[in-house]
Structure formats: structure tokens, C-alpha cells
Length: 197
Image 1 (tube, rainbow, N blue to C red):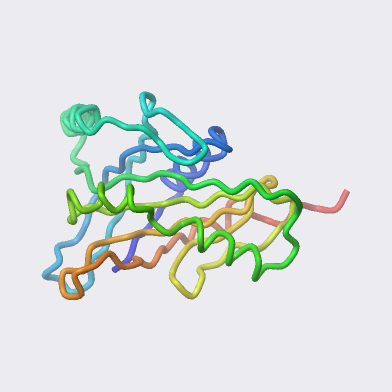
Image 2 (image 1 turned 45 degrees about the vertical axis):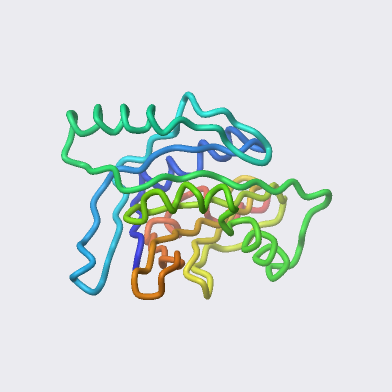
């Protein structure tokens, strides 16, 4: 299972997370997905809409599924994209800069795990994609990469981030990590190592 994140959806996943930090954020995803019968299921987010009505907290978000359904109906009138999932952030406020890559990866890997509240929502619709962005304010640059778990990791303007995708595996009867693919991330100006001044 793969999630292919293009240029603009990537921007729309990161910017609201940074804007609302240290509070979490939430939104819905529209796009395309291949059928499970193909044997190589892929989710392709095309429109990533942060929720304007969700309540943002440091350890959670309050959202309304009726509002999501209403917004999904409006989007379906405007374009061919289908409602394929949702996304939200989990934030980390570090007391000091974390300098080692392994420590940053471990910190973010812990934060991108879905909570019991997340799982309850995910269980309501197993056909959806669930993206979680872990965000750590940390003045240390690390080059973008795909982790061993298939998560997207990088640094932008004093933040380390990790994006994980979760999809229901009907054979194993559980949610598994979906591998993130984002070829654009290494070419984004903000993802490059800052020049020494």
C-alpha cells in the first residue's frame, strides 16, 4: 500500500500543522485510490482541506463528522475527487534542541502512532486513508528521507516533521503503515539545508 503525495497536497499538509502549532489540526482529504483487487492499492491525495471549524488543542482536535460529510458533498459538486480520508497532526514541544537524527526519528515515530481516539474514528470507515503529521519544534536540520517504516521525514524552518499513512489491511485485520512517496520533497526550496551566512 502506498500514498503518493504531490507538491500542493504536501504544502497543505505541512502549513496548517505549523500554523496551529503547538495545537493539533485536522482536515479531510480528497483524491483517488486504486481498487484493492489490483493488489497494489495506492492513495493519491489531490485536495487537502484543513477544517476551519475543528477545535484545536495541544493533545487533540474536536471535529464534526456531519460537517465533514457536508463539505465532502460540496467538493463532489465542484470536481471529480472522492473523499478518501482525513489528516491531523500530533505535536511535540521539546525543552531543548535534539541534535541526533536517531533521537529525532524515535521521538516523531512515537508521536505519529494513532491514539485510541484516532482508532475509534478509523474503525468507523476502514476504506479511508488516515494521515498523521508529527511535528517537532527543533532547530536542527536533517535531510528529507523515507524511514524504514515508510514514513516521510524532513525539516522546514525550525521544525522536524514526519508524515505517516495508515490503511486497513483486510487480510491481517488491522491498520498498517502505508509507504509514503513524495518525490517533490527533496526539490522544495524550504527542505534544503539553509545556506551558511
